[in-house]
Length: 267
Length: 373
Image (cartoon, rainbow over all chains, first blue to last red; front, side, top):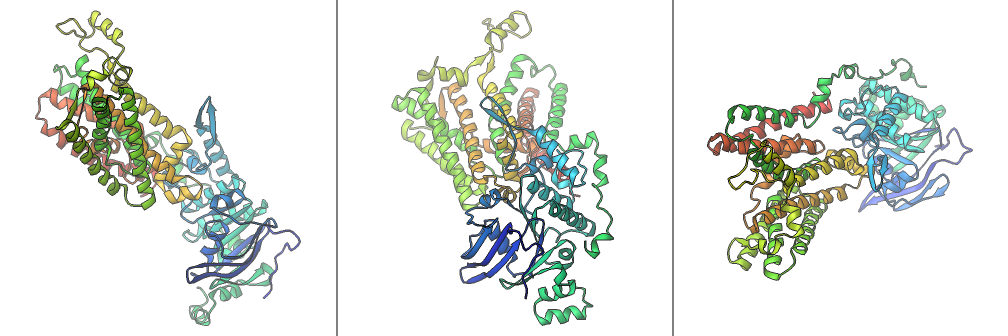
């Protein structure tokens, strides 16, 4: 198994080596290594229970690893809270825990980082600014929001994911960790999110894209790390591996592969 | 790019249905709409049925304005907390207990009234803080936690009253409080001169002793306006207000982006306790006594006003202005039924129906706001 990426010269934005995490007797991560460069989409593939969630929660500061090393821009780090990771430019967009549906787009966009204006000792939220920025940022990704005061619940699932990503980008994320952003979406919505991920990548951000859909991964990924039972099965650049091979690798055991063959390779 | 990508048409900029949003629809998605419409309806209703009963004469107006004002004070706290995703059922008991915290030190320990009031506020804030900490730490429903507080506080109110006064009322506060600054602040009448002038000009009636029928705006009404105004501004125009919506709307999503959800909720429990204490202080100063049954069932009235005002029971949505109008409806109907001479029992029937209508209406509004179908 080779472990190369298409930009080997630069320092990766994020690199982990032999990351270990266990919860009591359960070993969730048994030595995971991976790296992401700027301007690269790394797809993290794995079936349920492979350790994807634990890995992203460790990367985003929710869990503290029991072993291994974590580097950001070549410097070793230990995050105590998700806020630390956020301050280091690592933003995580969770599948359905990113937005508050009843709140307006503008309020969601600035949730936790509200712009304030001072009047003497009093501080007020600058709603005009929040609405203008939300509208502009939405327009940049091709969503025409006439009223940034409308509730996020009125947006489609794909649009919500895009708002969450746009928010992370606006607040200066260097690396985006996207937790199954397309798993609950239809075809058109998925392509909208994938296009946007590609756009974000082309602006020089690093993206870690978690999915178990090989097609979605292959559509935007530059390199692919396959996780199985808490270990990395390897990292491959796009030129090294085809979509079929990737599918087989992810499926892991023979039984599932033969089942997939029986079903015409469509799983 | 990948094979699957090229053939897919560019994702449309937006759902075309959003563009057809009319002014009517954007109005319909405002939380306070129901309460404002309801208030207009009850005004029309009583303008017709209570015509000539004095309900809309100056003293009649002051009557229901005072009732509505008292309720506004606690409804504001209840609304903010409900938007933040929690309930406080101990508001009514807190009113009774705060009254005792003022009256007992004043009457039995000779503590200056101002200090007693300060003590009551500090004590209430501490109890609110404890309510909040227990809810946040244990993740139990606030409904149960504050139901416990409801009984604990009410029991302590009765027990302390019996212990010190040997009956369920501690009176005699007036002897210590009259003409004091505190009395003026919580039970004074504002704009006296203006009302005397109005009476002399014949705009409002006079009592047999020559005093105007209404001597001024009661302090409790001014407190109500002040608290509702501050509550509204904090909710809609500050960072903390955004945190209230976020904490109630989806606490996990809020935590993920760094909103201090626990701090927000604890603060809101302290706000409801503060509002209950303002209410209690106004009552104690006006009546000159604290009674063990003060504030019974007020927690429900506050919640009803908030719900009529468009607050969702599930949190994350609502407004203080709505709660204000909810309280106004409450005051107008309660007093209106008295003025029209209808049996007072009907008030509760009306209240129940009103609540049911409001809840049904709110769920429609919420579906509109979130685009659920």
